[in-house]
Length: 326
Image 1: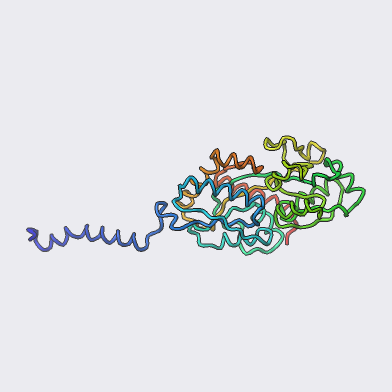
Image 2 (image 1 turned 90 degrees about the horizontal axis):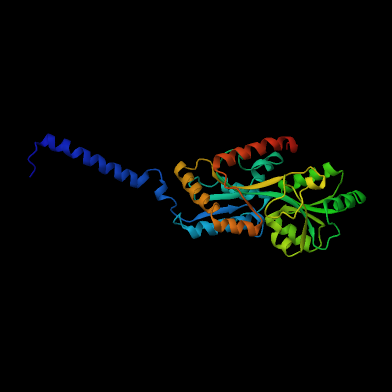
């Protein structure tokens, strides 16, 4: 039996009662903390088809993340192609902002596409986790093409205006293709494809004469000699493919770079974003991803979310001068 008076017994029990209430509240409805995230496997949406450059990027990155096991759950790649990237981007940004649905998307659906058509998302209302890779754009031809250089292509295009077929598609390809025509006074017959794999298939099948793509999309075929790169739209030759001359080296002032960013819906809790940034940042900086990136023809970035978001804003502003408003 307690030796405290009844009133004092009640006051003494009050702290314990309050502590119990706090514990029950935390268990039933407190915001999720980093320690409790993730509660299930994570879907990483890729807005382009299997076999595309960004699909290869995503699968290589996810393999490292899953092997490192720092999330305690698996990350699964889900391809949601269509609409030049808008379908998958919409699926990512319309998901619940709890970190269980994220996306690895090219900058185009965020910086360029909203300038040309109505999209079902606000490209500024996003959580940017990090920038994964950057990639200058290439012009490529089949290995047996008569075009050996940008000069050859320009001469042929001037001799046959509007006849030579060029495969492009997403705006990150369509814009440099259009700028090339302006800079060289040429005109091509444009054919749109939704992803690098479709362009490669068309090139190898003899259905188009020139393709615009990222290095990662054609690396295997370039190494095998099935495709030939005419020029790369980087400021300087890149370490991964120093044998490919830049457009500038061939007297065409064309520079254009695409990049892939890891995003989530707006409102992602801060601790969840930090967890994702930490886990994916570790994977991007790993030797395993560096080796995979080199084989795929990727330039590793690893810029943090703040830097990546600033870069998106800068390219969005540039797009206003490059694309007529919808």
